[in-house]
Length: 201
Image (tube, rainbow, N blue to C red; front, side):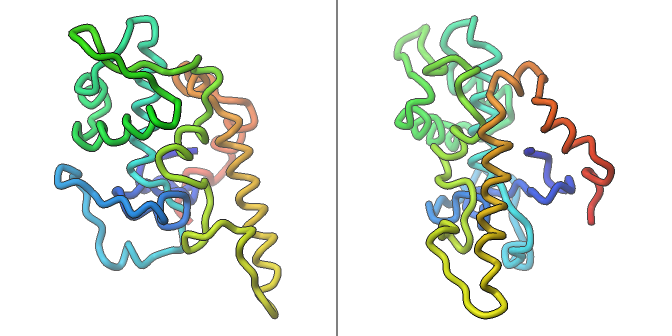
């Protein structure tokens, strides 16, 4: 589940280029000047939380905006940016990635803009994140199956694999249509409704 910064489900949305553990670390995206947030050195060094980069957050929000307006024809990047409060220049880069990844189509002209390349029901949140940020879960920018540990740390590998499996199950199992219509799968709602899910540990 993606929550505003500070929500306590262990996932933190951070400015572009700082998604250290949950996707994006290996892509080397740098934050645009228009991006309002800056992280302190201490926060950047803190690798104790899984992180969803601002690039992934913006991409999902843009895709949801397109899903919600799919019956209204193509939507211009400026309109998406304004609707979701996303820096316009940064959004253009994200939309280009999404177009190359086959998630959106672009149309030129006065009535041009962007629209989803296929029904929102067939695009998962994971699809969007992978297109703009790469693998869902990495450790130091490396995919878990490529890691190896020895001694008392040996059981870390199946732990990271289990974590990746859990993240995949949630993000692959929720479509843009689910979120845009506020109809999350029951198992996802149960996780967010669990006692303590919204509390900071």
